[in-house]
Image 1 (spheres, rainbow, N blue to C red):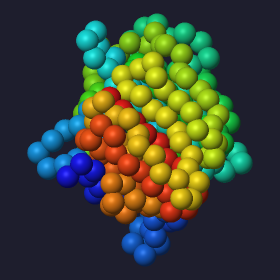
Image 2 (cartoon, one colour):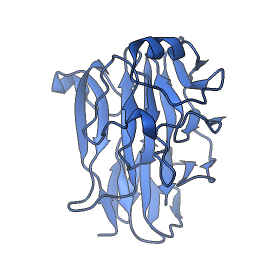
Image 3 (cartoon, helix red, strand yellow):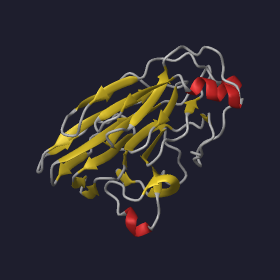
Image 4 (cartoon, helix red, strand yellow):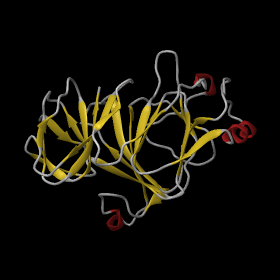
Length: 261
């Protein structure tokens, strides 16, 4: 099948939300913190797509960066409450590997670079970057499917795909994160200089287009509904595309992310 609808996996978290965009979570009777999209049976695609929903600030993390590999990710913010914040990197250089000591954790936490979050913000987070997601945010996360995340404080954000990196694996000499503001209704490239590509696209109801894909691609509809190669899609889903020119149709005004490797 040229287009594969990836199955959603709702993950309950105490820091999650009772209501999340595009999904009737209230009927589940749970507080949903994460929505993962699975992989086709027997495969491990190079990218992982998930939604994150926060009602409180999450733990501070760093994706480890080794000489030959690292885990890099990006976020597109769908909703943000007025006082919501995102923390990416530090306001002063941290050039020494961080150790697993409570006193040090408390010391460097004050140096996280917090910034206001708003719907339509896009961030690319390079490997080795310290980061934290604040309260009142709903976002889409696209990341390399590599297990190199290290939790750096006391809150739990354990995910089944992650393993803990040791302090010796970490490099805190950071490349700058990419930050853009591209609200829904816009079209354009979000990321083209990294381990994967990502663009945001807007379609009006009745539009149809062939998207170009030289390898694997992920179609992530954020708003609207339509069909892709004759298969019905709606906002909140994720599709893995393997054909070079899938045909996407919009039955209503729509916005989507398109990730490629």
